[in-house]
Length: 147
Image 1 (cartoon, rainbow, N blue to C red):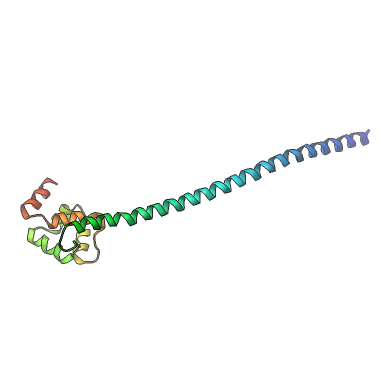
Image 2: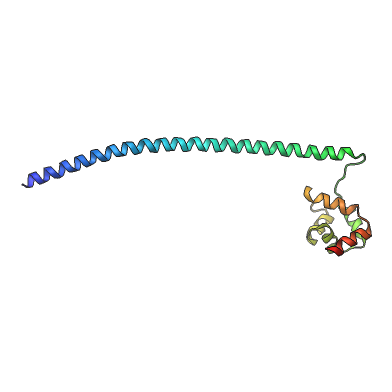
């Protein structure tokens, strides 16, 4: 009897291995298909990212051209930042650095760095700078009082 039990046990484990092997083969095929699909999706994402970056670069290249054309419509010199002119304008308006900073919408430390020439304003801040440089004393004080 022990021989029959052992033989039965061996046969059951052989059949179980055979079924597991068949199931594993199907799983391996699906895993391979999923991996190739994931690789395709990764390549697609990479290509789309490259297209997005190139489109952003094209937009960034096109944007300055529009600004330059706008500046070219007005005759005269091109507007640019000058630390000495900013300090002279602040003194002409009779303002402290804190008041001028409020007028420009920046911190006092930023204004100090602008005036000392350590830093130049970002392009987004240049419009505020040009607006402040074109203001008169009364107009500038009204803006400060409103803030």
